[in-house]
Length: 306
Image 1: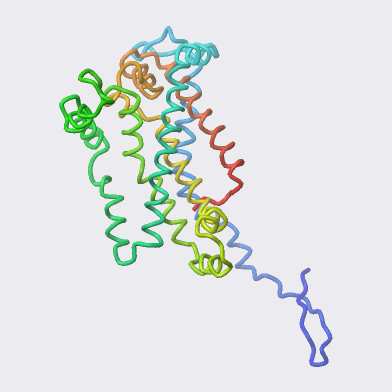
Image 2 (image 1 turned 90 degrees about the vertical axis):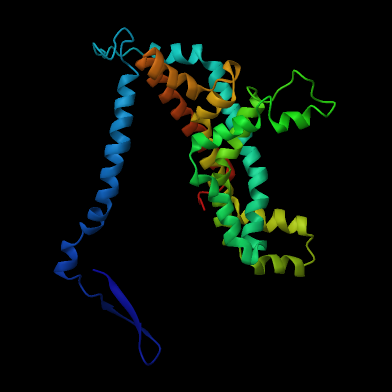
């Protein structure tokens, strides 16, 4: 039985039993579970069951086919075959997505800072400019980059006027084009969490740092950056994870030498028809990203995301 502490007119504490919960409150223990049911059902249908089916297909016999079906033979060799054959594509995907994430952070942090703390009445207009690319299709935006970086485009015409580019040099079908496409397409995923985090920053903290004669650079690294770390963590995760599995940028802006693991998975599923190896590659990519994300969140020292 619980007790409630009260104070008498003489100042001494007295104790009296707390009121017992009414019978109706006991019957409503299931209300929180009922509120969780729609979300839980959604996760089970669209996440847990597909993941379980994907895990099962990684152990099928590759000798099967979609027409004749696959036999579950617990063939773990699908993982070793896929990783050993496509290790270069795995490394390339992680490297490209990491470089694109760093580029998004370098470009996105000053932009988010300006929108959150300096934009004033232009804030809404700048936010619209950030999310405006979402109004068009991902594919159309990438095709636009293909036109911009083409050998006959104005960018290459301008670069060939410099001593660094010869008549046979090009940007399209190079790692630069793929990383530039990833950076452009996923930049809003970095800016918006940073803006949300910086928007919560109390300006009085920066004023206090200035009153204590802290240099603006020092106040940034001692006040602004630590308080915006939840936005940095959220932005880097929202950029790195989809970029690592992307295949459209490498397909349209790259070449066979810039193929990412997403292109291999797409090809194995839709062209080759090797479902077990494609599933093993997908599962390996997902597991690798989860491990990297866990390490990153642990190293960043923050459990709060935006």
